Image 1 (cartoon, rainbow, N blue to C red):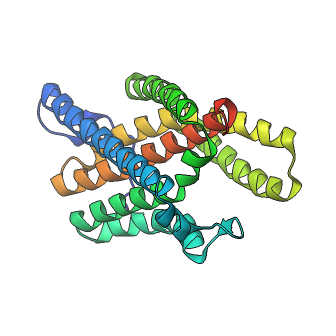
Image 2: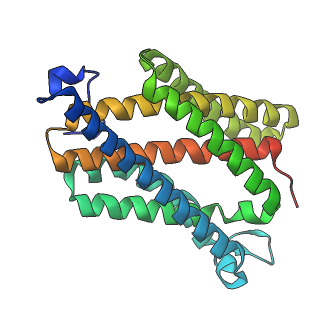
Image 3: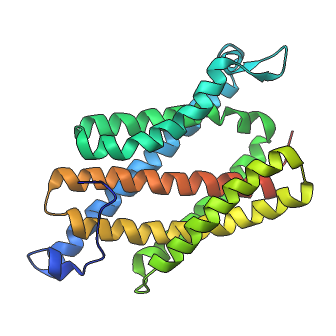
Length: 247
């Protein structure tokens, strides 16, 4: 079964037992999702700080002479993208341990690839923007978890907006338009604010679909954690573009 194949079903159609049992299981599942996400962010932050404060490690990624990335640097930059595409296959076909390993590897590689953040921005502004991101993410997560509104259509709209954002960002690499840069920053914040609420609701529904199997529920938890991790990281980076102070 594909890790993304789930249906929006009421709990009574999927689960047996009392509603209190369902709520308790859902609570533990969501705690697991956010624990994985939080631990992944911690791994990313530690690896980013380690690379940013170690000239020897940083030289593996960036050539101090040419001020460009090394071959290993390019590999580290694109390897998280490769792991994202591989994750669904691993989660659906490999062991739970392998799925966990891919998640931790992804988090570590993201940390290495984001080490430039610690160099480009002041520590004070990174902390400030992180707190803004955490507050925004928490509020939208709570909304996505508690709302009775079906956010499926919103998610589809936001996904199309994300595709447009990626294309416009690539175009602006060549255009170097300051106006477009700032416009994309604000649009990026709006998109990932919406995706946070949508993904939390989607992850909640994934529990109802996969709760018959403890192993599958654990895989869904890791998959959900990865989605929220990406929402948080992207929201943080776009807010940093707006509110961060460069060195």
